[in-house]
Length: 304
Ligand SMILES: [Zn+2]
Image (tube, rainbow, N blue to C red):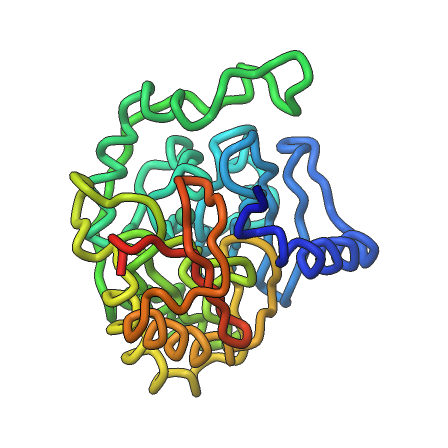
């Protein structure tokens, strides 16, 4: 059976073919990560997937006094060494959400900011068994060796919420917006200088996954399409503060019209959960897929 991602793959492939044709940087310190300089002070780094999720974006924004690292990928290779080649400024690490394809590299850092609803999950991920369940031991044909796995190490978790603003020096502000649904504490971060919304897995060019069961998980009441819709209504009036989206996977410089399309899509799903375009096999069970313009959601009935 097809997956919810299939129909979006040609656009992703075209995007990455063009990115690689335009020139990609590699660094010996972390050779499997592909690096592109997207703006004067913005680097986007693509972490290859060991089999869970797709290849994941990590973004580095260098401000006048501090640099913000958004997400840390799978915890394979020396991300910290790579980031320290790109900037000598102190690093402020922020996770868009707790999922292992965005946070398993946190162990290389002393502290991570994350939305308060996702903080308990990072606590759970201090257990080496949690990482081992998600990132498999290296096989002979893996792109990594076991010694490339970052050792699991405790670090400080700093909970934040909607409206929290980071100052990277000289008035360079990065503002947090809460975008739940995919994860209870999912966030977007607005870079007001570059007019970019770093949107995590909440708004991506492939389907936003709000599927599977949320039963028994931390803050599961924020793992719904309705919780997502309620926050999108607050984001729309702020759309004059950014021009494009930099998501956690797939296409970058994604048009911001995806925000209003996503709000319309959420409202359509809530109004009629059975109006889906198709039913597919998702990463976590069966999912209904619905598309409006630039927005798509793979959802299950219990997550509406
Ligand atoms: Zn995710």
